[in-house]
Length: 365
Ligand code: NCD
Ligand code: ZN
Image (tube, rainbow, N blue to C red):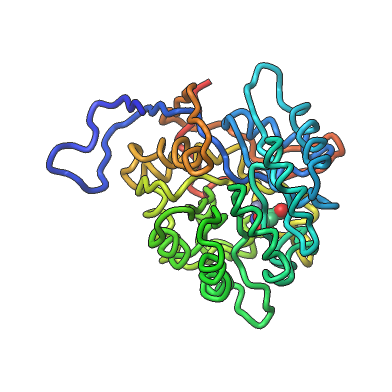
């Protein structure tokens, strides 16, 4: 990492004051959690991720879900077709874990270099999770196989019991599911996706080996009160839902710690505006166009720009056992002119996430 500055962490000041850093150059980052969708939406979503990130872990929650090597290869081809000319971008495919998925198919996909990971959605936990796992016991054989072949399990960590308060579902998942899962499969590589609570980051940071977590840009910026600031804000609704301020602060501390178990995953999840602004609006925040700028801004505010490269570009590939990108990107302190909304060829609009306070970093092109 190279930071160009006139003063940086002045001697005798180990706190949060980072003064006058105007540009930062880091290895090109990767995004370890994206939703590209398909069709016209995919066409507009992919270029925003490919602009910033060299690789992305692509979520499989299409309808129908991606459950076979053939489906993943076809989906990967559609994504590659949408990458703008001249941009080096590699989609890393995942399989959608169902109660009845074939372990041999996953092992074959891993061996052929098609599947980079397998995604666990507890059935009913989030958007397009109806085909998800109803009981972890049903997939014990599959998890055994994944552990044996070194295929990581990516977890949407929320319990689905409707009696459990929505703000408690992540913490309950750790107590009720994750601890047992780790005991049963100690060698299974696990990523606790989009951590939103102090409970989650404390748990991950207490574990030795095999467990990491991703953190989104938006969960570093908004807390649950923001969802209701001045009225109900459907474009700030995602799952897991943003939590209290104490949790946001814990996420900021974990992300900016540089700890190798914590890495970047935007969970960019585009939905047409009419599906978000409805009497039962769906969950998902579209952040791909602004995410890298938002992360940089947050690390700047935390006085931790020196940790941005670890979080964005190093910890993820090391966890997945992949090489670190050679090329670099530079972010500069400047007003970012990024789109507030995008349109698909089918005339659908998607609102882009941005902090209320605006963006004061931009990617140098
Ligand atoms: C995601 C989606 O829209 O596919 N939604 C979300 O709120 N994050 C699914 C998910 O990752 O939970
Ligand atoms: Zn997601």
